[in-house]
Length: 140
Image 1 (tube, rainbow, N blue to C red):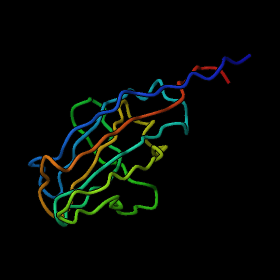
Image 2 (tube, one colour; image 1 turned 90 degrees about the vertical axis):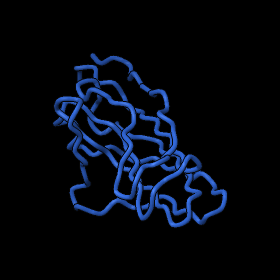
Image 3 (tube, rainbow, N blue to C red; image 1 turned 180 degrees about the horizontal axis):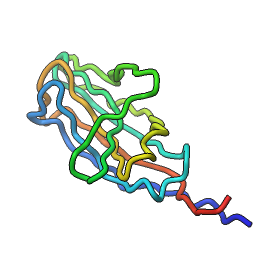
């Protein structure tokens, strides 16, 4: 016997990258991994970069204590790919969905994050992160 799938769509974590220096990250909403079904975690990222040369990339972070966060990369160790680069003018938001890494379920908590590159962000550089997954039901 199995139960109907229970899909979950979290509230979007939104904000701007004001004063976030190159190399810095902003974490989204935290989710306990014990309720996430295997291979169903994803996040819709919408980012906009207005600051000239600023890059914004999306990635995942994990934690055992919901306090100390570690970036989790794909198994091939690939570098984070910039979703958008600012040109110094009003940019167009870019939206992508990024699958959560399977290794994240070996940790107690997971969250999406955006990373700033090249220069410091301003209030015009924005992000939105909305997580979706199917809830683990304990039955096959």
